Image 1 (spheres, rainbow, N blue to C red):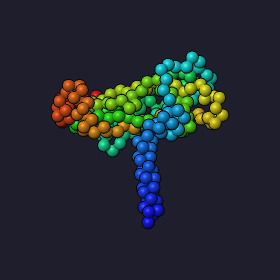
Image 2 (cartoon, rainbow, N blue to C red; image 1 turned 60 degrees about the horizontal axis):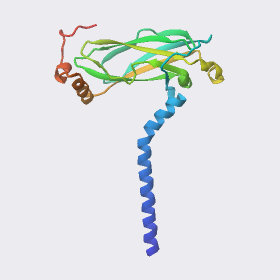
Image 3 (spheres, helix red, strand yellow; image 1 turned 45 degrees about the horizontal axis):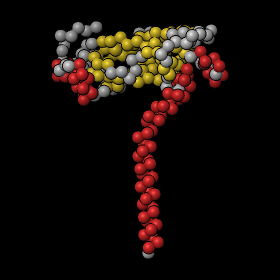
Image 4 (cartoon, helix red, strand yellow; image 1 turned 90 degrees about the horizontal axis):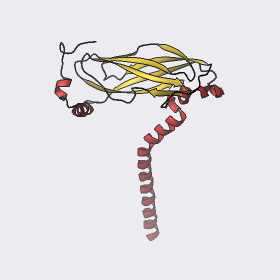
Length: 205
């Protein structure tokens, strides 16, 4: 009987440890996954840099642009150009435009990726609007730039020899009413004023 109780106690301790470990891993999973993607380019995650490469290579790659919004973002969001061609190491500048076609202010934030996914480790952004909060009032529009280059090191990777085109995609998501109120509070503005229908009072672009 004593042995049975001891086994039960040991089992409870082990199970408790497993549960705690799983909980800990679940919290660590997202940042670890993000770090893994950032380093490896897995899942089409791009790289970042503060400056352009010193050398420009001869290989030319076409960069295409794609845009999307989640169902709760009533914006017209599209790239200003469909494609640009540039040499590896050459810095490119592209623009997206977003317009709020609803009757209330929306606070959005964009995620991104590139395809083919294997090209993510060589596609590098110098500056972009991704993950930055963007608020648009009713009828308001914004021009959103992205500066980028394709790392010249791509020519040394035989696995990428077949890549002639890279597509950069952005998707805007609604940050929600609470985030909007907090954002407006930081600006010192009235959330009700910014969210109400201002048709005829806001210039449409």
